[in-house]
Amino acid sequence: SSGVLKYVRVEYAGVILSQDNEVNGITFGGVGSGTTVEYVQVRMALDDCFEFFGGTVNAKHLVCQYNQDDGFDFDNGYSGKLQFLVLQQDPVHAGEDNGFESDNDATGSGNLPLTNPQVYNATLCGKNADPDAAQFGMLIRRNSRGKFGNIIATGFEASLDIRDATGTALKTQAPGEPQFDIRGSLFFNAKS
Image (cartoon, rainbow, N blue to C red; front, side, top):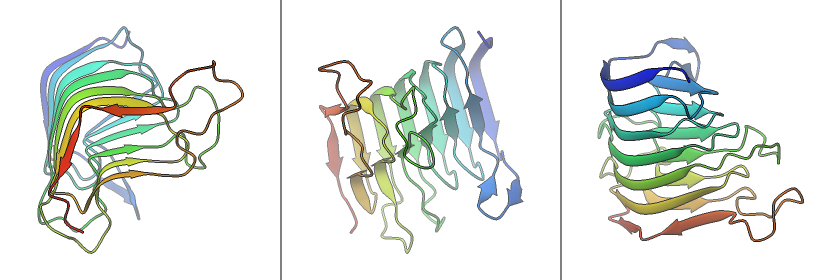
C-alpha cells in the first residue's frame, strides 16, 4: 500500500526537464493494489495526466483535462484495473497527444510482467481537429496487452491504432490467455 489518494485535484503540473522530457501530472511508479486512488482530477499538465510505470494499482473516477501529451499512459508491466475515466484534450496544443498510450517497454520486449491493464467505462474526447502531429484515441503498441471495454473515443485524428507485436503469443503465457481484447466500445468522428 502507498496510502490513499482520494478527492484530489492537481493543476498546472509539470516542468520541462529536457527536450521531450517533462514531468507528468501524476506518476505511479510500481504502486501496488493496496493503494486507494479515487476521484482524482489533473488539469493543464505539461505531459501525461496519469502515467503508470509497472505496478498493480487500481483506480477509478479519474479526470484529465487540457494536458499536453497522453491522457492515460501504461508502461513497464502495469497490470492494474481502471474504471470511470474521462479525458478532454486541449484543442490548441499541437503535440502528439493520445487518449490511451500503452507500451510493454520502450523496446517492445517480451519482458515480464507484460503491460496488461484492464480499463472499463472511459470517455476520451480528442481535439476535434486534424493536427499536424499524430493523435490517437488509443495507441496500443510495443508488445503491450490489455482488456478494454465500454470505451468511447471521439474527435481524434485516428480512433484506434494497434501495432508492434501487440497480441503476439509469448512462450511464457498460459494457453488461452487473451492477448488483447476490446469490447462494447464506440469510435467515431475521426479526423483523418
